[in-house]
Image (cartoon, rainbow, N blue to C red; front, side, top):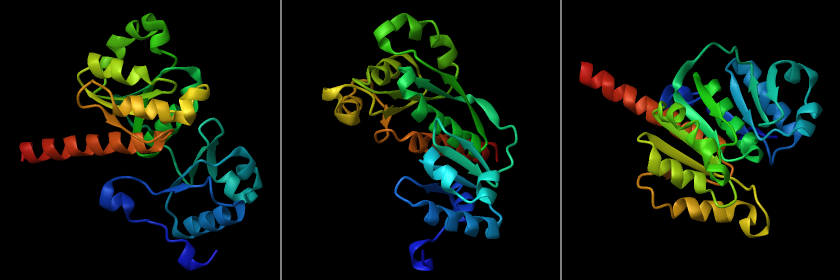
Length: 227
C-alpha cells in the first residue's frame, strides 16, 4: 500500500469529538497490517470495524496482541486503554437475537468514544409484551438506537412510544422478501412516527456516531446557556 492509498485522520477527535475508525471489510490483511503499523507509530488509538475473525487471525501477532477484538460485532479497539465511560444516556435495542452483531457494533463504537450503552436484546414486536415489559427502562434513556430487520416494525413502535431521539438501524436479517435489509430500510424510511432518524442497512457504527453527535450538541448548548 502506498502513502497515496492510505491517509488516516488522526485529527478527527479534535474536530468532531469522534475517534478515528477503519472499515476493514474490503481491505486485505496486508493492508490492515500496514494501517495498524502506522497507527502504532502515531501512538493514537483506533477503532477497527468489519474485521472478520479470519482477517483478525491473519494479522501480525503484535497487532493482535494490541487489539481488544470482539468476533460477534467484528470490531477491535487497537492501542486503546478502556476507561469507564458515561452511562444511562443511550439505549441500544434489538428486535431479535439475530440483530445482536449490529447492536454490538453500535455499543462498541459508543464504548470506544467514552459512552456506555444499555443493551436490550430480543424485544421485537412479534411478542409485544417483551417490549412493553422493558419500556419504562428504555424510556429512561434520552437516545435510543433501534436495531431491527425483517419489517423493522420496532423502529416505528418505539418512535410512537418514547419521547427521546430514536435512531433506527434496519438490518439484513430476514427471508427472501426482506431483500437483505432493503425492505427494513424502506419501512423505516416510511415510518409514520415523526422525527425518527434512519441509518443505512447494518450500520451500527453510523448510528452510534449519530448518538454521539446528539450528545455533544446537547453539551455545547448547555455550556453556552450556562455561560
